[in-house]
Length: 338
Image (cartoon, rainbow, N blue to C red):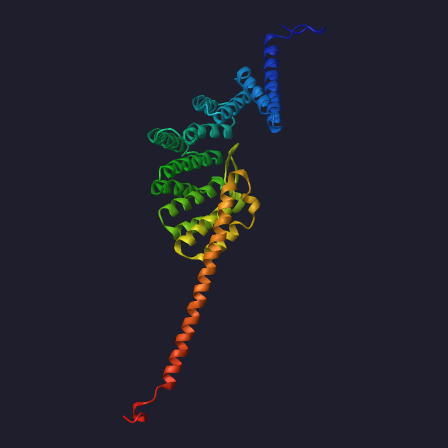
């Protein structure tokens, strides 16, 4: 059936195609509006649009992305079960963009760590179980991605291993955490530099807790070499690194103090605090205050050590003078008349 030249009805197939195109365009437009509102700080209005997209356009890429954003809203509100369910839906949906799908998959494991921190007043056994669940799920994710050769797949696999190591550290088992960080560093190619920097950093922490100080110093040196390139967004929105070079200096200061090298500790603290604005954010306020307090204390330690060394040097000079005076006043036996 052909459309009439005077403006007759389009064939059903053509109508269906046009509607599909319009739906997609509408969904993309709504998605952009939602992100714009979010960027303007209009959180509730943005969420309303994301929820509309998720509900009204479930079979579009934009609708899947909206579901991913709604899952984050639920995660922040500590509605963990529902957030995890939506993240899993996104991870399984072929319409999800690769970075979003990978990030959603990771969140199905990291949700257990979020619950661990949110349920701080829960019985110890319950929180321990959450860490066990995190390790199990994130290990599964890392294995499922182990054959991926693309950057997104390899970075997501490495990120999952970070989570496994983190759970071990929370359980106080630094020795068990260490191999997961080393596995990330062995991956190298294709893994985001941000994840590599975090792996070096966490490796340093795990080595410090094992009192393997020389190796820990080397790990933190690697963090400093990567520098600020080891901070930022991983995949779509997951962020890692927070003043990592400065934190590495502060860890080294703690190690030098532990080993009794006060002057080296002071030097490391001064480097870590050389740009205090890097540690001035809300996340680092307590760390900055403690680091400044530690620097003042270590400087006093150095002053006392220097004063003690000065007094010891004076006593040594006195002893040398006594030895010289003693030798000059003693006479040979043959000259004493005996």
